[in-house]
Image 1: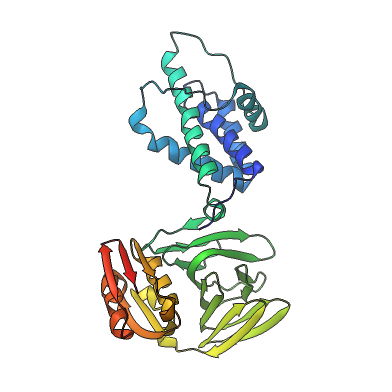
Image 2: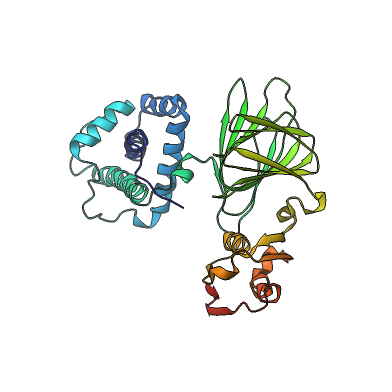
Length: 335
């Protein structure tokens, strides 16, 4: 996954969340303060996301409560006051010794947010920052969306929800998801990637995003695929690939669609390089294909997701001559 500097607007919102968190933990919270925080969180979805991330870091710092924190002035005085002003927080002066515990909590709140800001600025993954739902490697997650539609996220995936009065738009930022769409004739359901989008009203389909293309598998109903000015209908049992502004439709095999939901990984004549990439998205560690001569070799097979070491071993049988060298449990070389 690529990294990029955090946008200035996101950083400002994160700093504002820092100030609110520190205020809420200071022990000097009035009814007006609580209402001010509620108003700030409700003002924009990005505010709420920043607040949730700040809270998560605060909870993670539980073991540090009561300790002295070296250099615990994470925001410069000027930036701290600016963030407070933009967030609408009143920073009242704190007394010295009677409120030492409160001062420590306020400082720890700022330190928590400083840690969050430092982590995000240094290792900022833009996809995760934009996403409403994320899965890690080997994880799957089922979610019910606000309209009643259901989504299942496959391993190492990220999904952003962009619903409004005119449409129900979800953006698959990474990985793979399966959607069982609730019917709503007034608002179409759009599943988008950078390659194109799938338009539906009430249907069930899967979308898989990779660097090379976006694949769509339609289980039931009808959808429209839009990409590069083209519009292509897709019927149940068909699959489509979207790449470089083009749409390629092919017959599908319903029994093979989204088998990952049943705990399997299937290869049906895919290049070895793609199979390795898919295995890596599920399996801890890394499988490296060092011999490019094998990259386009087509392989097929059905493997259990909870036994992917067998899938790696099976590559040797599928590609005669391929050598498999297990350097460690987490590093396997193919050559």
